[in-house]
Image (tube, rainbow, N blue to C red):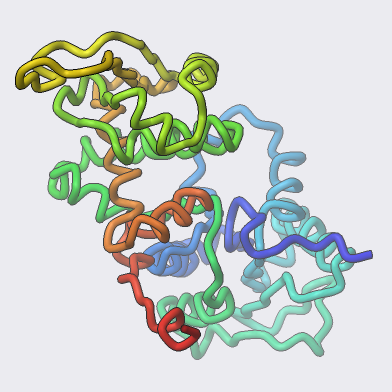
Length: 330
């Protein structure tokens, strides 16, 4: 029985196991990998997450379960250190269980590494630059349909928010983007469908206070009754959402004479419960959703959101829509 995961089932695409003496080289590799859209576990990127944790068990979880590949930077210093050997044993336990490629060795020197057979092909770092190694890593990852994916570099989101040159605002927006992504992952499919449909088709006139939509339109978009919509939108309050239901004003309805039927609105706000910066979290959430479907038709945009694929928020992973395959198969 094969219990191995698919490429979309991991929290990280690559984890890096190295000795501190080689940190400068490895940091350049991490930076290059992220610039190409890879999700990288590199300890300097995770200081807040690691703070206070039991590192022995946490690192075992990461190197054995949470990454698609592990690049092991072998060296004399690597072979001598306690923590690198702990990471190596965790990675080797995974490789042994799955019996497939997981550890990708790269060598600074010829020091033997326990449990790493000489027959495994490795990259010689004495002849390979950090950018070249990162390029090989990107090739190894290959192209696959992304799912539950938020790019590590969100430059296109920052452009949409108009904060390309404001590092402090970028830090706030990045934190809120990660929070909103985690919130979406915690929702049920029905909750996610309703919230994303509301944001996609709602009116943004009242941002940053709320985004609103006609209840009948949301009913038609989702196929759910208004009563069901109320239950679903009310049920995500613990995730930072605040939803209200009210009758439309004459100005919102746009009265010309007498209109038949009543008109009601859902108003939605989202607050990042983990953030105290005051940066407009709902604006970040809306721009994430709108940006995720940029350059795509409604059908394909919905497919991106259903997969929680936010590739379009980064230049490294953004793509333009192509209907060539559909035309060829027509």
